[in-house]
Amino acid sequence: MDLRIGGREYESDAAGVVTAAWKGDKLEVRTLYNPGQDRQSDQVETWSLSGGGKQLIDEVRVHPPHNAAEVVVRRVLDKTD
Image 1 (spheres, rainbow, N blue to C red):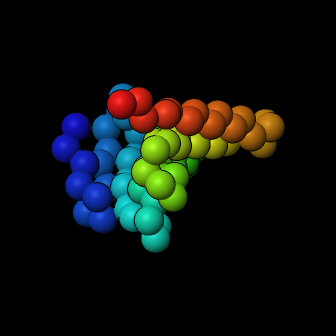
Image 2: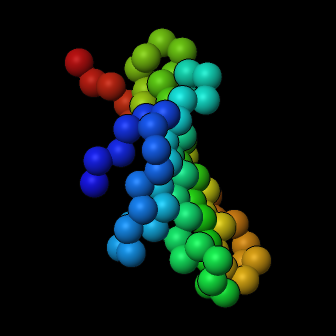
């Protein structure tokens, strides 16, 4: 997959419709699965660095089909020397 930040969306049967854009100092990757279908769902993944650059934070928000409860996963990766 060739996805350019701020560029055109990438679409495939396997990956869905994917876009990436800078939102201030955060990178946001949006994926739409099964667009226009009964089982449509989406995911928003946001990457950021902590103020001191010592942590890489990845937050994923999944919106399952049929208005099921949102799932949020937050990973914090610490820089080691």
